[in-house]
Image 1 (cartoon, helix red, strand yellow):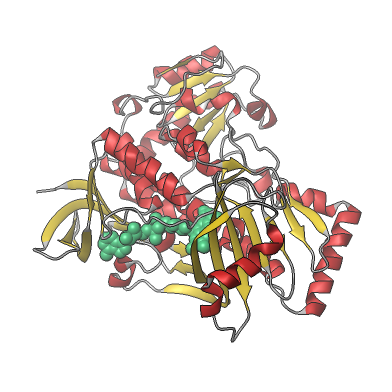
Image 2: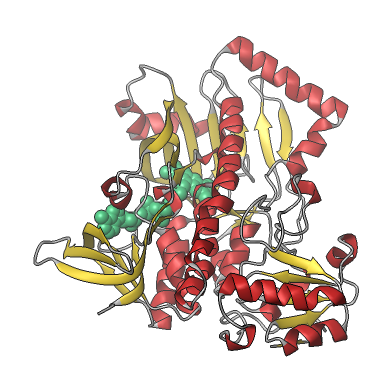
Length: 514
Ligand SMILES: Cc1cc2nc3c(=O)[nH]c(=O)nc-3n(C[C@H](O)[C@H](O)[C@H](O)COP(=O)(O)OP(=O)(O)OC[C@H]3O[C@@H](n4cnc5c(N)ncnc54)[C@H](O)[C@@H]3O)c2cc1C
């Protein structure tokens, strides 16, 4: 007998998010974690607009933003103390601020509370996965209370390993975790503050070659510092209060700071050799580790969760299993590009050689003079597009040219109306009606700039809001047939679309129906 459709091993932020996404799609989930409760100390410091849009899909964007601070800019300070604005993320059209400081435990609390509130997911803390046995049509997972006791079996259709960088599941499946570990160690300090630091109102990367430093506001009432340790430097004294006060003194005016944590980390750049073994998938840190310099560790895991959730649901409802192969095909190159960005930026920040530091600072000054910096600072993040995967046609080669394969923008919070399943944005009532007649939710957006720019009358969006197909009136029948092939079901038989849970009422005039 099957106990659940998906077993999630690990209730870090990626496992929690996946549990919510799957539960909202009607998938039965058991989620286990060997810890007794979510990890209580801060790790991730920032998330982006793509992740907030995913939170919106489960009705939690406003709750996450309540514990967050929007960051409009990022400063780089040269070795001689000159300041440059190196990031001013252009407000994309995803409907959310592009850079937001968070407090990971508060964000996780928001998710665990939502899981409790929904009451539909079987959440088991204090439960360790000990064995994973794969069969043709199910997976048997043996778990045991972490505190000790009898082992029991959970049989599920699929397993997703969200069990972090040291993933037990990945190791038990003998999947290599290739890549490298930074030789640099970083002292990470988290402080509780009585008011925002006047000298550091937004993230600062300090290219002091004697002690490369990152200093940034987290959620309200919190501030983080990261100080690079040099090879051979003894870490222990850096975790003592007196040394911590000395290091942070230049950043503090009259604010009161109480340090809640000092820990030395080594960062990794790693990717699992494969992210699928039959019915078992890796997601989040178990599949890839990214250094934190551009805040993309959890953010990449959040994208994994959303990518995997709708595909698992589709396959559980009859879609061919090969749809699940597109998970890694789509996500791996995107994760790699985020890792590359983090490594490049890490290289800029971690410079400890005075000559290299002078050259770096000179180049940044030149980039400012020539205007290159103002282009880079708005466009630095890889675009949310996929070059291969589950799309009606092969996306264009160059990311900037992609319509199919790209994340549809979100003017006026249209996701609220599009719901969490397949949907269409159409440029006329007739086209919207034609799609609705086929069972696909559609909104009419007569002057939609994206449709105009991409010379099409409609865009068919996957549940994760990536564009699956585009066309005009004459292409609807063929696209609908193609989608039925992908899903292995007639569109009329699909579960009806539903608005995102607890989302605010739509303000736009566009009409929706399914
Ligand atoms: C200093 C630092 C700064 C960071 N900054 C950022 C940032 O700014 N932005 C960002 O996006 N990311 C950042 N990250 C990364 C981010 O914190 C991680 O990517 C994220 O926590 C990974 O989530 P996860 O759910 O994949 O894994 P984890 O959070 O590691 O969760 C794994 C869970 O699996 C459980 N588990 C393990 N083994 C078993 C088992 N056998 N059985 C049952 N349960 C098990 C564990 O108890 C744990 O709860 C940072 C990380 C660090 C350390």
